[in-house]
View 1: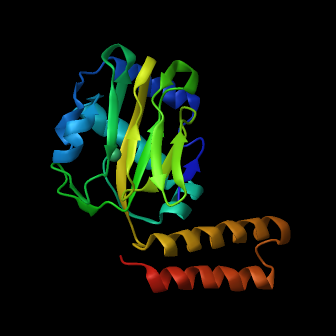
View 2 (view 1 turned 120 degrees about the vertical axis):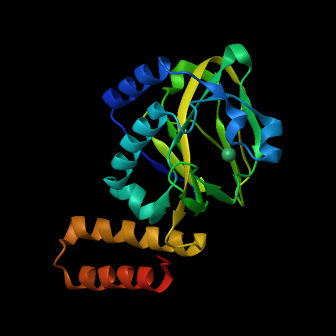
Length: 229
Ligand code: NI
């Protein structure tokens, strides 16, 4: 399941992020790649342990935990400290087809997670660059994703995916992984659909409607049944 979450960061926040990132030192993106993905990865990253990456990452984490759609779709247990990359047309940057590493460890915090979901938070507007689509393969084929700055996409970390070559301008993004309380993607998808339907019912009938209350109970009981915390 691919889930887009709009407006995680405001346009003002995005402009501030971009200003800070423009003044930072960047390194070869292969520093965080696994053996296979290093062969097909050509971009730049902020050094993962740098103060700038951590400060910007913390701002993203704060925005995520306050975003109901993100929380509903991901049911996050632990979120990896966000990383930042950029793809420049001048350097023919791209990232060929790969699968993300199953387990990620963070050197500074000692955090270790199973990567259930991958996240890309777009920090460039679509009209700033050509190419640079995030292409994600699932049972239904290949999906090309290019979102407005401040929007993110959640997708299974188990999926094959790539970033097509940037042929004009520059594409900046944050990317990271999370471990969900609900490991099974199908179960997580059912809970998300149920939650979305309940929210629509609440809007129509109010939170006190007896059926809404029952469905809310079922929602929590399914999480109780499936969650690993
Ligand atoms: Ni990847």
